Length: 150
Image (cartoon, rainbow, N blue to C red; front, side):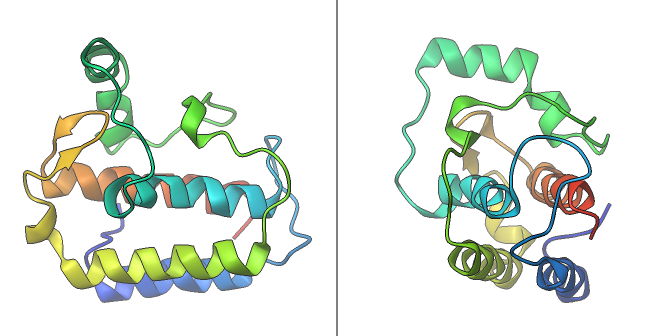
């Protein structure tokens, strides 16, 4: 598992992002490349931008019981996995804007470092360890970059 808190690993993620083109096609799934980039940005928006509502107590409990271990473990996601409603991106997005936003989020996360994320609360899952944050970020990026062959 790559480490989103290490510069060398973030450089690899950014290299993969820079291999994407506006007309890159997915190997599986329905998202366009611009939608995929916007989709990946949602994870970071939930950390850095106060634009997504916190799920109510009942939904958070369900997410902790049913989804948390799948999301924060080191086990890779399977292809064509369903996603939460706030991660569904509809319509066209600005490829360059979404690409640059994702690179900025990756760099910000790396610069803040793992200590900043130790015990940090997730909107959906409550407090996570820095390793759980890393797993969630890294495997999500790897999954979608692999989806587009980079």
